[in-house]
Image 1 (cartoon, rainbow, N blue to C red):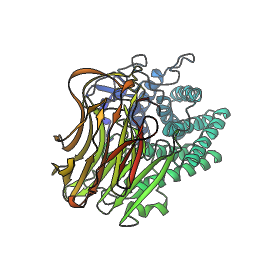
Image 2 (image 1 turned 135 degrees about the horizontal axis):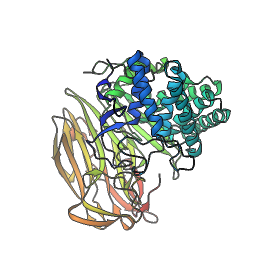
Image 3 (image 1 turned 180 degrees about the horizontal axis):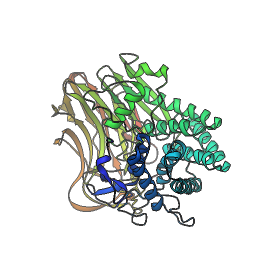
Image 4 (image 1 turned 90 degrees about the vertical axis):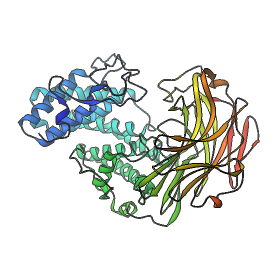
Amino acid sequence: MKLKNDKNYNPEVQLVSTVFGGTGYHSRLKAGTTVHDTRLSANYALECLREGGQEYVKRATDIFDKLCSLQDVDPVSSTYGIWSWTYEETLEQMQPPDWNWADFIGARIAHALKLYPRLLPEDTVGRLREALAHAAWSIFRRNVAADYTNIAIMGAVVTAAAGELLDLSMFLKYARRRLASVLDSVKANGSFSEYNSPTYTVVVIEELDRLSLLVSDPECNSIGDKLWFHAWEIVAEHFHPPTLQWAGPHARSYSDLLRPNTQHWLTAATGIVFPDQEKEENDLIVKPRPCPPELQPRFRKLPESEFTVVRQFAIGKTGPVTGTTWMSEKSCLASINRACTWVQRRFLVGYLKIPAGVAVLKLSVLLNGLEFPGFRVFQQQTGSRVLSAFQPLFGTGYYHPTLDAISDGIIDCEDLRFRYTLLSRDVRTDSLSDGRFSLSTEGFHAVITPAVSAFNGIPVNWKPVEIDGGVAVDAIVYCGSRKQINMAEATMRIATGLELVSNQDKALPVPVSMEPVSGNKILAEWGSLSVEVPTESERFTW
């Protein structure tokens, strides 16, 4: 036995065990709980089939039979065609269930049926065909919009594969329309709505590689290839070779630095090698097609010593959603002009090349110690300088914008703060003149210039703090005994500037100003930068 998850396979449960990381939504299970993961198990089953041999094929058969038994196959059920995340938590126990599991598990079942049907017993193949049909019907019935990027594409792959494997032409026709709608959305908006995501842009490329592998339909593949190339354009455009990091802004990301699995995937697709990279495990279920050759040089060298990428990602309900990414030979800094402050958003993020590796610079909002989606940030950037201002929102959850929504907007608060963070080993924070602060490491200085700010008419206090793994400058809205804050009635005036420089004395010596304009809005200005932001709360919308 030689696969990574051999040691985690439980023959009694017939699934792979792992330690649950905790997400704050969908599941009630606590982080650190040992669980049997359905998606991880489906991946392992495909690895077993690829490896071959009697024992591995037996394991794959047992896993797929188990997964088929765990699917909701009641066509009148609201969770028809999907699976729970784990064996330990049923669909009824999840809060709420994740309908994306029809897509995630369905894609892996289609993979097995296309590539390995002769290795599996006939009755298992029959059960998998039924499970794929249920998943495809669930996807068809849910019919997500094109702006749900990774699921819109993954669901199209599942339904296209189901159409061909099960000889159900309606699913193939549906997949064509769905892929075409995503391409139309990209053309209209400028990119994927889940823009520049180190997690989900990879998923998009992986699923389009899967489409090429599993589906023969020329129309699906023609559209898929156009989407595939655009996704690679986004990756190449935002890759920063000096730090070997995926520069922001990120619509959705689960970590500040690239994860090892993403590094391995990039190595397989582009050939770039990361420092201290562990030997790659043979666990890429879909081997990536090589990155387009015309984009390959971008992963090895910047086209200029200093430049800025400006990319419109969406038209937006109130104007374009645009990312700005500044890059130099030693650092990069990026921002989005408008976004909510969800934990998965990297709405302002920078990477600094230092002798010890890479330092991370970012801006976030914390409620009771966790990143809080209850604000909207408005930003403008030029070069290594970013002006940020915030508006309160209500109707979000404590952790997720919609899944744990608090409809009346009343939150329990012990601590609410805005935080600039610099994560690295050798870091320090200083209070400068004129109410400014700096976060410094190895020749880099992030100089922070706050305006005089207030929340519900109460002044916001700025102070430097030390945190685990680095230092921060916090704008403290409240810190004390637990109290309730009605976000639906909140008003706020807060704006601040950040500039990344090599010499603190060269930072812009101009204060950030805020002046009232029409209605309930203020105009924040800092040098050549300006943003207009509402001061009163609004109900959250994407």
